[in-house]
Length: 354
Image (cartoon, rainbow, N blue to C red):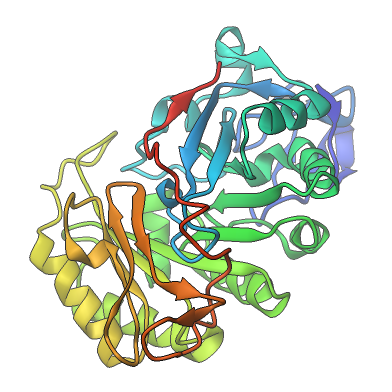
């Protein structure tokens, strides 16, 4: 437990949490919406500081990040809580619980120990994932600073709902953001995510992009919710206009989970979304959660040759040399990484750590 950042005292012993746009006013002895930031005697405390529920070594492709150091072994770590309540959340058993409800399922891992473990396991990157990392702000910030000093790449897998002052403090310490834009209407966000705010997510995507962070967008496509042509058209046009045509966009298949019982996403729906995005000018659109689909591969937007071939979470070929297509020389502007094959991850399966 650690005193939280981004809060201020309020009336009658309550505190105002300024970390995310919910701006919870929290009475004594209670937590905010996320369930992990508690008012204790008029001070706000981060209950999950140093407390870990999940830790494993993944290929960076599992995040998914496809244009950021392909094949990199990535230490992935998470805790409890979230500032959304997505009806289809696949990690609802940890993200929808509070720290006090779940304290018996945690292990303590100090920031320096996490960095030591990351290096010891030969991981080139550290990712905060599994639940929403922004509500783990104090631990995330401290470990990210240490990771950067040790030359470890830092990755934040996030739904993007955070106020801009704390995000600005984080930006210089995070190398890559894998950001959810779950849909493209405020009604969708209100109905599916527990009244999260689309505009805040879009503003934060723009802030990260303008700061020069590596950014990849993911949309889990859910039948009857965000699978319309209007959703695909609006979001892909927004990415092209406000970020860039080179920004990778991942369209992933939904499967029934938590409180949502819609049938799984048809492959044809994802392919239609890809077609619409390509027509609107996006150069890199990926289809995920459909094993073996060619939409997980990277193709040169100029000569259409295969650049990166993927099987599952593994990279089997990479024809990007010094940031360019090795067939036609086209610059892959959104790509960050080293030349292969020396960096290829030959074990693309997750490895348990604790």
